[in-house]
Image 1: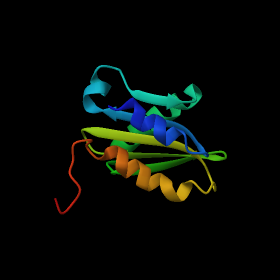
Image 2: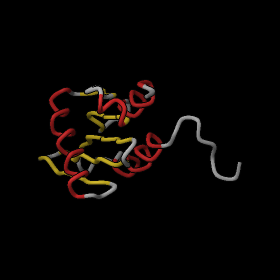
Image 3: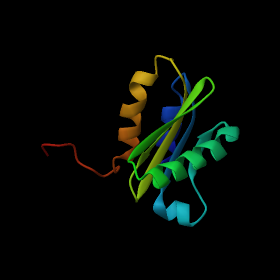
Image 4: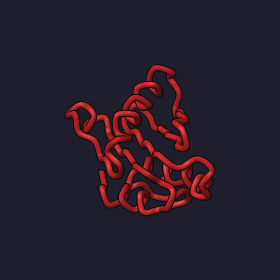
Length: 109
């Protein structure tokens, strides 16, 4: 995974932490993580919740923060952000961009 891709997402004010993990990384016990370490166990539990719920995405509210986890069986992205922050409008778009393969061509090409 491109750590620089998730570091760019973390630079947005209002985003606390980002997970970008492939199924290969998960089986190795590794993950692409940047941000506050205290959120990592919460995000990993949200990843499990997404699998249990059999949904493509879940949002978990924790106090003044929200955790959005989205993906498929091969790739999962999680973002922790401050609820009500203006960045919320962009979070879903950022998650979609992280889920896109870095080599994928835009539609129409």
